[in-house]
Length: 302
Image (cartoon, rainbow, N blue to C red; front, side):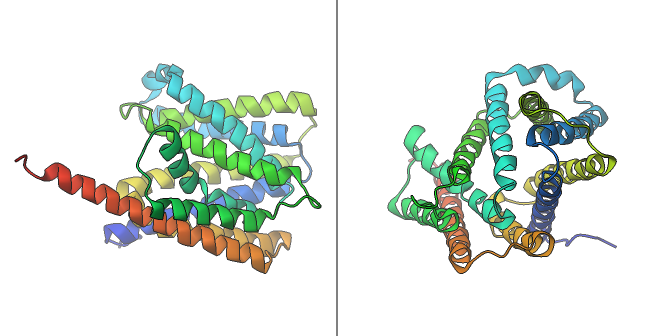
């Protein structure tokens, strides 16, 4: 008996939903522990466990001889961006509703499209630009920046989106011959070291057994999320699974309500809806563009 649907698209979609659920479980556990443990120490403990888990996978798949490749410039830059993004994300998570922060992060694909158009010269028609602008309006509706209620974490959320978008652009420059788990291990090592450096600045306290246990569970959810994402990419096209990606917002809203008693207001919910609509439209346009390029490449030369 199969546990997953035989249809490739449905199977990929289910894997994406499971991946999003894993990421939200990680964020929920981190937010719970972060109420009693400094951010730097939290990231260091979770990261150390993630390094062991991903390292074990690399050992199991015989990828350890590939580790020297992490010294490539693109991997080092990508990992450095993720250090800043992770520290900023966890810091913001301690001071924001989990659903709001998670929803803002869904604007990353739109930010990638914008940066690709500005810095890489990729074609961006008016429809694509309209989707990008609409998505960022949705972000502002969630963050609600204002002069009277200015909050540094509002700026931090926008900074996170930028650094994650740059990280994703750098990912495209990494040679395909480098295994994805080697890249993930390099990333985990950098983030762990970044958390350790921050812990030295913030001060270290002796963690309790329950805190270590919850962070170990968070590391398992984080690692399983990455594994499920890899399985998703292998099971179906990324554009086909895009609608399932937004299940993360449902999980985060449920987590906020059931665990933290956080209920997004109507404006924030409307902003979330705008991000979803604009993100799906941008993904659809990207799929159409990729199909047109593929078709034109298959046409015989005159």
